[in-house]
Length: 330
Ligand code: PMP
Image (tube, rainbow, N blue to C red; front, top):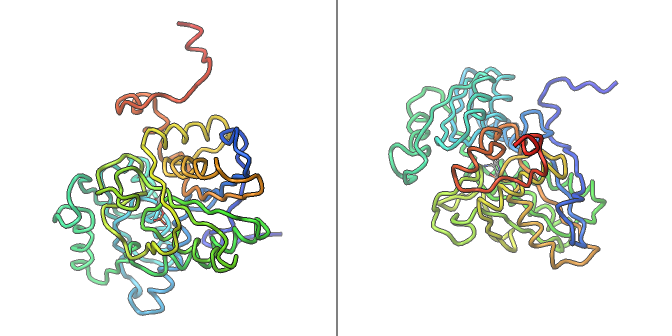
């Protein structure tokens, strides 16, 4: 019998699956790593355990303490899982562009949520960075993991995500593609894969058009969890060979195609990463093995990317739906 002692023991060891339909015309193998198989539903479960373990070890988080963090939702879920198991309180600060489903999942795990405006500068007192700083100062026993600068974020990917990809591809991976938010995923995973391969694996970032990683100024975009308007310490640009900018429209169209054609229901940053991967793969030889990390599942985006009305309201065309019963009845 294989029985996990707690839910936390099920974090990591997520599966790899080949893309078969959206890769039409591409010779290289394109594999996606499905992080929604983590118990909290995203890659962020990985960083949460390592960050809290380290905080306990370093005396930054004491019994009865409170975890305060600005998070687009996924990091909050991971932290909430660990906190719940160990008796900590959680307060999460979210920008208002984050979907309601993502907020509700945090409160379902017992966390408290504070919502802040998206369209203000990071140093504005109302920004989610500023609000979380203030709460971390004012709540007694507060610990702010600061996923943007905490070295345990990239380290968790260096120790788990990277080795899993190397092991599961039998060392045949040639390219790694991931969206860049805090930069922890691409920095940790990329660093490991470069080291273990004798620096032959090529590391490619995917970024929303307008974000700083691909040369933008931080202009707003709709895809969630990726792109920044500043350079976080968790991101090491020296690890990354290339960053490909992807529009919201292309990201969302691919997100829909992944569900419709591959049976993979994931979030918008996953669609974005796949668009970047396919652009990179288009010129690669047949023996290339491209691994794309898909950070979370699509359930948190049903009211947005998978909602025709929402898509139309932003001027995005709907996914090719083929013939529907509604078409026949019209
Ligand atoms: N996609 C989603 C949905 C996320 O929540 C995040 C985390 N911010 C990322 C991608 C990017 O991961 P990282 O912060 O490790 O760069």
